[in-house]
Image (cartoon, rainbow, N blue to C red; front, side):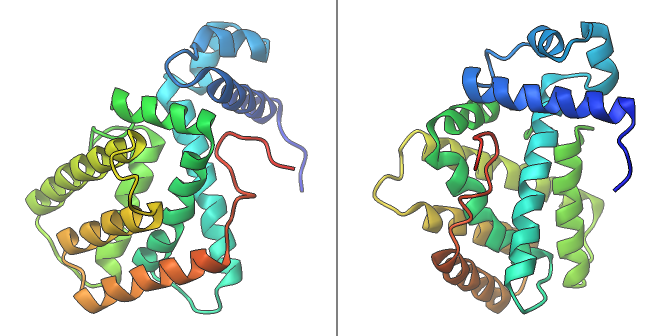
Amino acid sequence: MGTLKKGDITREIIVNNARESFFINGYDKTLMQNIAKDSGIALGSLSYYFKKKEDLAAVLLNDYINKIYDYIKRNLSAELNTYFLHTVASIPYYRNMFDDPNTRLFYYELLKGGALHNEPHSENPFRRSMSSITSHMMYDYHLIQSEFYKKAYTIYNNAGRYATLTKLLEDEFNEVPIEYVINFISGSSGRNLGLPHDEIEKALQLALDFNEEHTLDHIQLLKATE
């Protein structure tokens, strides 16, 4: 592995300080000026790397989901398409966040703020990543949809997904295991996109089976792990 450049080292320091601040203070009370101070740089220099706080959250979320993807790929013998992989990954992605009180608060505030999720044409890296996943799902199943349909799907799907997640975080579904709530979201996303019913059902069952055998609690968004 090559030596990191100075800019890469600074970026890594910023991300690590943001992660710690998000964990301790939550999303709303984390300030960009404090992240800059903790990182030993001026606020103006911080904006060179990350223009907004949501961009830091997006980097952490992308890193988190990719670690989960990598674990699943290493521990499943079958090759998965995008929908299957994302469906299996969604359960530990949310379960691990919601099990930790600090991370749960961070994500709740992030959802309520709306900046990271609710703009389908946002330039933040997390939204671009989610748009890419949708495109790959359509490609895998040879779906050809109009630009109107893709735009409407994104808006409709995001609104339903994040409203359901918000209610889950507000303990609206205490009587139901979190795995079933997340599978409901994944199944609804597949149906709204027009994926085959039997494929959706297979993906949902695989998600339950895999996550019954693998906890993945060693992969965390904010909380430090041994």
